[in-house]
Image 1 (cartoon, rainbow, N blue to C red):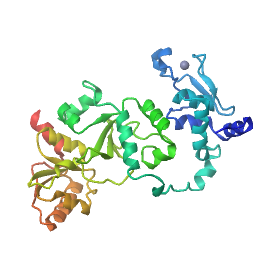
Image 2 (image 1 turned 120 degrees about the horizontal axis):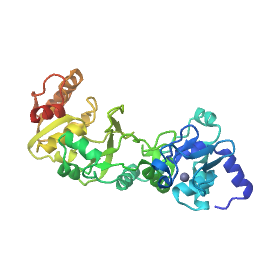
Image 3 (image 1 turned 180 degrees about the horizontal axis):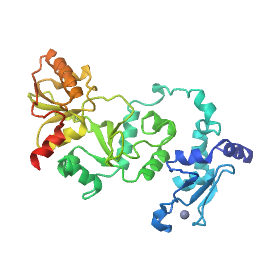
Image 4 (image 1 turned 180 degrees about the vertical axis):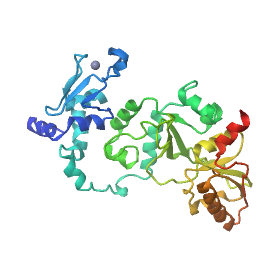
Length: 342
Ligand SMILES: [Zn+2]
């Protein structure tokens, strides 16, 4: 792709450097973002040193001599790519990040046809995303958070839990690999071009028998984050920990949410989870073939109503169901185990 000087100028003037910075995954606040070289700054540049001049389309760090430039240098520097690649990246994205954002959001963006992308494209993107993340590091905040819920290393290794410990790097690497449209299509990026799950660092993949990730749930570990869980923006394909639904006779515990499922697994129960009380789908019934199902949804009004509904569906298919029946009013699996062991 060769662009003339005037074409490059036109591209630059059509873009908001602030929107591009945000799209790169930088958190821009009051016209500033943190420097790419936090080690050169006091406190890892906790008070952002790079200022943006939106009018002039320019950015500049007031400490680092070489951290400055226009929107093209910003993309080059942040993604570590060449000038030509940065142009390509900006051009590919250009239509949806024009200065007149108002106008472009008013005209609904054209829906990408599913058929334009290969089969299992979403799953491939999810797979690549998970590969960018690290396993839960021992003694990390996430490890302690899990341990408090009776979920330990053997379980989190087995179910391939992942931690997004470097949000900006993950965002950057995804954008270097895929177009924003592809990442939005896969449900990882939002309409503003920002990687979701910034405050939900524990990533819980839904994997099938062949260990292919079809879906994931992201979990917050800080107390003030609402909601605590974020699902990938995509239909939930099957219950969590589906691999235990192998068609062989046996007992399976059905509980609410992946975290409860992991707590049960940690106590050697064979368990599967439904992501929310109302997310059990009729087409999942046949996956429970030959199983005796013990329902242990939360003992609150919503949980009990859902339990009755799921139980009716399973029984209609000839399956035996029981209620766990041990949870006191208002409790869930986690609080129950916690109260029994402490
Ligand atoms: Zn700097």
